Length: 315
Ligand SMILES: Nc1ncnc2c1ncn2[C@@H]1O[C@H](COP(=O)(O)OP(=O)(O)OP(=O)(O)O)[C@@H](O)[C@H]1O
Ligand SMILES: [Mg+2]
View 1: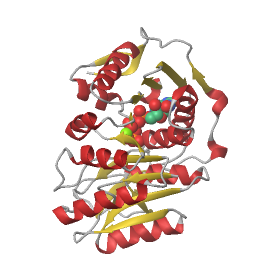
View 2: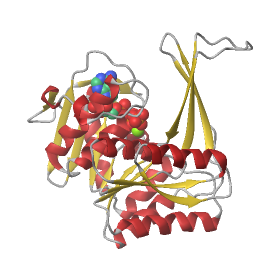
View 3: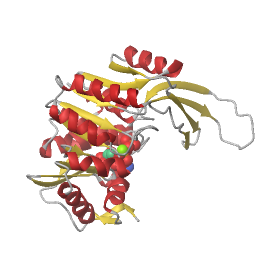
C-alpha cells in the first residue's frame, strides 16, 4: 500500500480556448475539472497500476468536497482532514496550439490544530503503508520544517518516506533522513546552490544530498533521464520518446513507478523512467496505465555517463 500526502491539493479547472488575447472575452470550447496536487497524481498513477493507495488530503469548502468526490469516482481512497479554509481552485488555459497557461491559487492557511490533525492522520495511515510519498509545496501556515516533523513521525510508525518537494522544505527535512528524495534538475541545482551542466554535476549534487541525510536520491533530469544514488551505488537510465505531448506530472508518474517497483535499486529506477516516458506521451497530467508503458525502450547504463552534457542544463 502506498500512502500519499498532498498538503496543498487543488481543484484543477482546464479551459480549452482557441487562443489567448489579454483583455478579451474568450469563449472556451471545452472544460474539464480534475483533482490536483502532486501526491494526488502519485496516487492516481499507483491506482492505475492496480495497487492500493490512500491519499491524505486537507480538504475544505465546496472545492474540497468536489476533489473528494472526483477521487472517489476514480476509485482512490481519501483520508480526509477537514479544514476551515476552502481548497484552492487552479485554472489552466489550454490553447489550440498546445501552449498551456496556468494560474495557481495560494490555497488556505492551515491552523495549528489542522496542521496537527494532518500529521496525526499520516501517522494513523503509516501502519499499513509500504511507502509514504509526501509531495509538493507547503500551504500557508506550515513552517518549512513541517516535512521534517512528518518524516520523524512516519519513521517512528515504521513507514518509509519518499519526499518530492523543493527549497527550504526539502533541505530541512534531510536532517530526519527521508528514505528517498526526488528532486528534478532545477530543484537539485537549487538545493546545492550550483549549476548543472552534465550528468556528473547531477551525480555530485545527489551525493551531496545523501551526505546531508537523504537515504537515496532519485533525480529526474527531464528529457535527459534519471539518476539514482543510494548506499549501494549510482545508476543512470533514460528512454527515448519520439512525441512529447505533455511533461506535466511526469515527475509524479516517475515517483509512483519507482515506489510500485519496490523503491530501491536499478529495477525501480527503470520503472521510474518507464512511467516518466509514458506520462510525457500522454496529454495533460494523465497518468499511465501498465498498457501505456514501454519498458523495452528504457536503457539502464552500466556506468553513470558523468561526461554527458545535459540537453536541459540548469544555470
Ligand atoms: N522530453 C522528455 N523526453 C523523454 N522523457 C521525459 C521528457 N520529459 C520528462 N521525461 C521523463 O519523465 C521524468 C520526469 O520528468 P521531470 O524531470 O521533468 O519531472 P518533474 O520536473 O518533477 O515533473 P513534475 O513535477 O511536473 O511531475 C524524466 O526523468 C524522464 O524520465
Ligand atoms: Mg516534480
